[in-house]
Image (cartoon, rainbow, N blue to C red):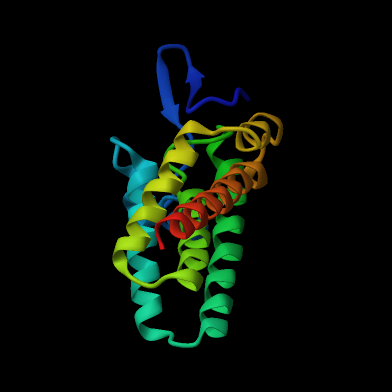
Length: 176
């Protein structure tokens, strides 16, 4: 069977593959509960959902250690959903899969929150993450081109999140 978004069943007809199946919890998480289905900038919408999720979580979880465990749990869930959805989508990095962006954004925001608190700083982290995720400088581009599976799709966004944090720290130290 060919591995394309539309798979040919018989001459003259095309049938969609089985992704996303919103009855599959991993698919639902992978598409960011629908944010990945928005055709214009799905990664930005998934990142926005992660920003909202982080702000809500930080509001209710006061202890940094508990927030760390919560974010780590979400990263594991997002990784698993990314691996499952990438396999089922038959496309290496389907744009509808935004759990990788959500994971990278949560990593960025958690690290930013350890240095500075507040929506302004979170928005700077958001902008830096989106810039790194879109531009894909080395080593992000290396992982993106050489790890052709769900883990690679997720891992390049974690690197983007970490690099975003490093740039944030440089700006923060210069400005304070």
